[in-house]
Image (tube, rainbow, N blue to C red; front, side):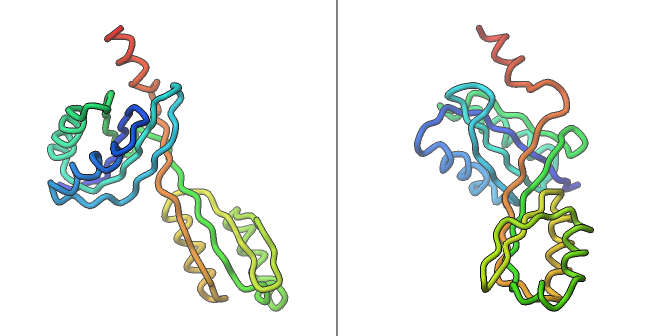
Length: 172
């Protein structure tokens, strides 16, 4: 049965590694729902956070194949209850909706969003939360008009201690 998994891939910061990581999914015809790459807590090591909806046996195979890549140090996969995760979304809405409707201000408060920038033609809002929370604000803002919308990929922290630290201790 398909379910959502978050894969953490720890790699050296080398050019081309992202392409090789993505190609593993492409070869297996697995759609990546979200991908985020950033520095990790360890200098020189990057963390790729990848969200997929697949069967658990397939995610296990992908993680094993990932570790065969030269610049990949270690890969792990997690179910949603094993991590804490968020996304950030930004919305560009017409400035005029703030002049006409105080409902928009209440909407911003209701969703715990914040105003990032106010321009004569538009206002940029920010919302951090789960995908369904950022999507709910988007749907409500559509009633007032929306110029642009963008959402980041998942950013996740594992509930237990970061497994990479434990793994690195075993190979020293």
